[in-house]
Length: 47
Image (cartoon, rainbow, N blue to C red; front, top):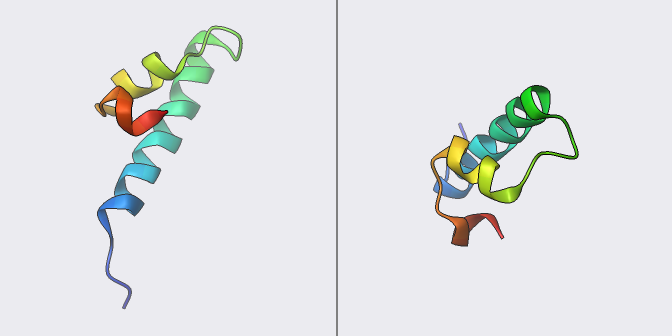
């Protein structure tokens, strides 16, 4: 069985946060800051 790496967890958090943010706010209103806030990740990990 494959070990789950922290990078995999963060990637999944970002994907889920992106989908949820776009569903709520729409594509044009979605920002990296709003995705990071929802994913509870620092801005440095997003950009």
